[in-house]
Structure formats: structure tokens, C-alpha cells
Length: 221
Image (tube, rainbow, N blue to C red; front, side):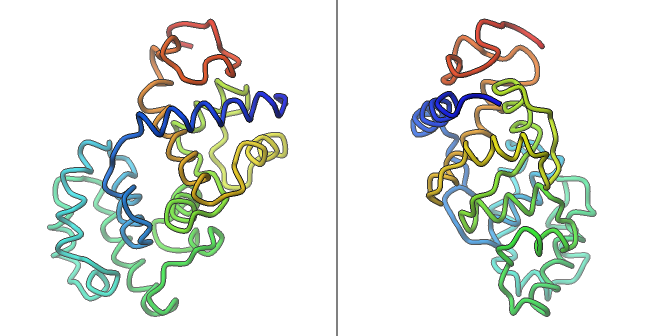
């Protein structure tokens, strides 16, 4: 388990980097749970540049859970055309119908409730909870799992119920303030996408290299 001082240094440096270099993505400009949910569904299996081509257009056609819940399946499929993995569109419509019917039209904030909705896995549940409601949870996707593995030597688990050692690390890493937790989770994603990449990580440019177990390591793992 890394020393808490090292964890805090990692957090401080990463947040400072994110304030200057974080990607200005449209779903980061909102805490609206529905808009966050649409983004997270689109980002399943699809890269950010492609999602950017569809996100705003889809929301113009379906600006609320209610409009999506009332939509015909075929029109939702057409609005999704080109993004692929069309089960996501079917699940998103079913989810909207379920939330309207069983949750008074309000996207649940609890990851344990979210994960029982159509098309929502552990990562999406945690992502909506933290990016819409600023809850103190970490959405462990491929990028974040890789960053935690390289920086702190933890296993690349992506399950919702983290092993004890990883859970303790995450608890020490996450701030107690909701807004800062939101920023840190976004920063972890950007670090994995832009610097700590799967192949040929840019270690010399990494803002947290001095707090990383891999400092001095170059190139591929």
C-alpha cells in the first residue's frame, strides 16, 4: 500500500494538471443526470471523437427522459445510426421508460440502484453517481484501471466492489468534497487517455511521474 503522502501528492499534481489541460467535453458542462447518462451510454464501446458527433444531436431530438420514453423504438434506432452497438439505444429507451414509471422520472443517484437498470453496469452506475451527483465513488474504466495499476501497483480490477487493498487506496485518493471528487475522476480519465496510454505512455510529460511507481520507466509495459 503506497504511503498516504504519496497518494496526496499524486492527487494534488493531477488536479493541477487537469485544471490546465482537461478536455472541454460537452457532458462535462452539466450535472444533469439524463445528459450524463446519455453520454455514458454512448461512450460504452465508442471513442470520444465519434460520440462528439452524435451527443448534442441526440439530445436535441430527445431532450428529456420523458421524450425518450415516449419515442418509438425505430426513431431512437435512427437517431443512434452510425454509433453502432445498437443494443445501447434499446437499453437507453427501456431505462428511460423504467425511470419514468418507477422512479418518478428522476435518475437514481445510488450506484446500487442504477446498476439494476437496463444497460447499466458497475462502471456506468459509478460514472453517473459521480459525474451527475458528485458522489464519492470512482468509475473504474480501462483508463483509470491502467493509471491505478501503473501508479500504485494495484490489480486492474474493474468490479464495483473493489478488493480491500484497492478500496483503501481509492478511499485515500478520493477527496471528501464532491466537486473535487468530480474533477479528480475526470482527471484520471484524461490522464489515461492522453498521457498514460496503453501503448508508449508519455512518462516524461506525465504530471504525476514523481508520485508514480513507474517513474523512470519508458515505452510500453
